Image 1 (cartoon, rainbow, N blue to C red):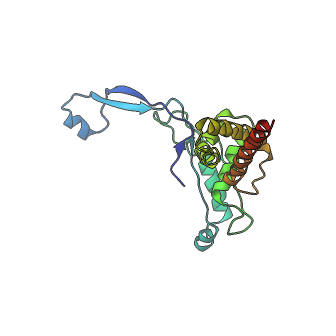
Image 2: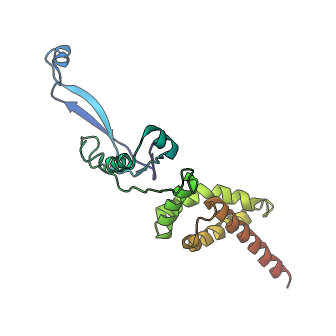
Image 3: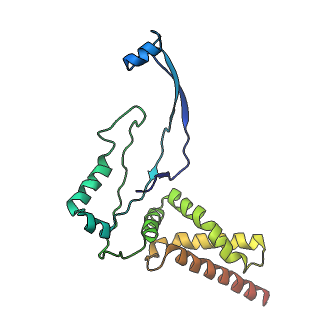
Length: 206
């Protein structure tokens, strides 16, 4: 399992807390009868985090990790907060579990390509946050692709980049994952740049 990261920026709230009770006899002796404890606690009103996990078929074969164990693992991920509530966790819950199963021990596709498909699927359904995440991740890459063809003209680069992401948005449902997402976006950026300069040549030809 990887460390989870928030999909969107979070806002942490700070709270001052005064505890009017002691938890142990040692704590009571240390405070000499004064049972007040001052402290601070930070909470996140809302946050959506994403973590990635991997199961190695070869290690599973070596250790005897079975299909039953795997199903138990899925069940524990889905319900891990249901039986361990606390004031700090509040209403935390697993909101989604996406499982990719390969037909061979070596896998049918690299992990990054599979995870990209989740983002693409969300963006294709009209999820603006997913498309914005896609844009923020690939915009620098698209900028570099078209920069050289634009001869360093920033206005031209911005126009081609904008056109590229318009085409990406309109073509998301056509992405078949036959190539990596980066390769697919590179082709669209390259074609957008070529189309731009082709139109410029036609314009100046009159």
